[in-house]
Image 1 (tube, rainbow, N blue to C red):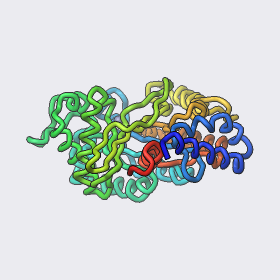
Image 2 (image 1 turned 120 degrees about the vertical axis):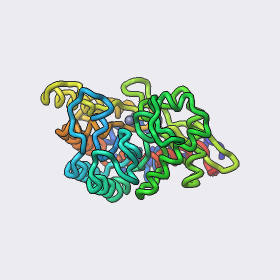
Image 3 (image 1 turned 90 degrees about the vertical axis):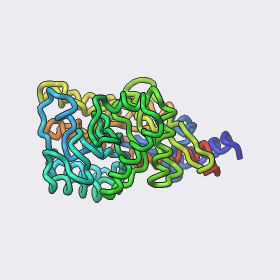
Length: 364
Ligand SMILES: [Zn+2]
């Protein structure tokens, strides 16, 4: 069976499934979109279309504190907040990817100790991530610090940020850097399935980046399928998943998983609570209207692009107010109401797996 035939078969079976199962609003919304959704091969075996949530910059501290001076925010993210995040994930069965920064804000290693962070706070946070988040979300590092590049030889931090560092670094050094990131997460019981770019690190050297990821994943976990998050399209033309590197000897592939929305919860640039709330409300409407007929998500379904949403740990925390997290709850509720069981929350590695299975059946 060639790839085209495989796709056609999937399209047909998905159409049949929807015909049988689709009712109400979800069916109305999806019926126009179905054929195209399938063209990229993401529907799951259950016949539901996947949806994923990417959460960047996760840490026991608010990375905003050091990363963007000028925003007032508590350094430590309290346990109660992380607990509320876990509860929101549970309530809606959200799935996707959650970053755990191995050396957040250059304060130290999370498998050892962090300056200005009590050991108990760090241990508690990691426990919540292991028990409450990791069962539903892929965990990835976001390089090592999401700030200055770590010096692998001296143990200090370099006078350049990680996005500049990766552009000029030899591949051997990048592999070593990623291996350390994976090792630190492994040491705290959080095996990573892939990696996330801080900012758009690696965008100018993407092939080198993808190959380094393949080698590092192979060294630490021997994974045949790994993936990374680098591209975010905001409201612009959406992207598909893509295979960016293959090692045929190992039978290994590296998939790029894009986010196809902006972070509608990044409201910190608005000065007042009301303005922030309005911004978030408008963002939810722009993702999917209350009647489900318009918005970015229906458009992505219609054009057959992966429905991958993105937000940040800082946005959910919103300088200690939790406004973004409330917004996420409201968005998840709307998605549930509008799409019902037609969409299925899925982790990013599952999404990458489905993509590869569809375009390269039987090879992996
Ligand atoms: Zn980030």
